Image 1 (cartoon, rainbow, N blue to C red):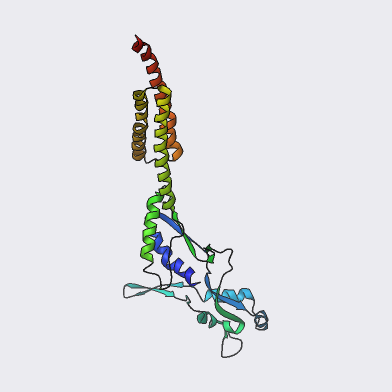
Image 2: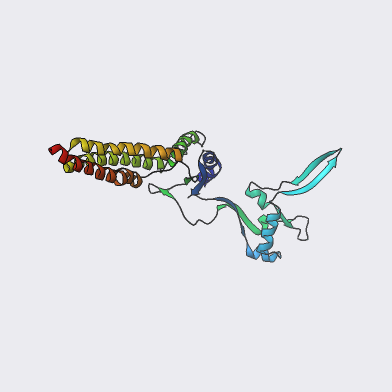
Length: 268
């Protein structure tokens, strides 16, 4: 219950101030509530129902406005501050005067204590129950940059939580992005090397193979330049199609046709 309150009132507001974060969802823990458990027999004996008890508690635990009062050309706002913060305050709310000098209080017909709402689920980390917060990114944001900024913010938040409370990242999306970038770099390099080997083996001409292979870095350069300027995201399938699908096919056909036309002339 304490961890849930720290998450809702300390960690979540600070995380929401991170650029690129839209919302922070919380799962796990117990939501602290002041629970009023009525005694049905006692309520019936004093002529009250559960609905009437709930209405009395509601009327005495909300802030209401009382309008304005003009004094000497100034306006003073009047309001009733009835918000409660402890279970004892709710227990001391008057319900009615039952024919005596002392009013009938909530504690006379119900038990008031600190409790929690009914849970529909729980969260665990490494097999132990925990409170987990998920930072949601704004649509169109850069997940790598946002995840990095959230991680830096968590290190700053650790200094603001009570002693003994540990805030640690459970899943950092930037790890997945970095591994994906490494996979893209590795696959593109290996693919380019394989294309050069296959072209040399099939064409039998080293210069022709190198000319075709030059289309790979050049096409990647122009594609990335256009993607950066247009702010278009990329993935392994699209980048691979640009390098090894669309561009290389045309380059291979053109170079092979040129070699076919040059071969008879070289024999003369």
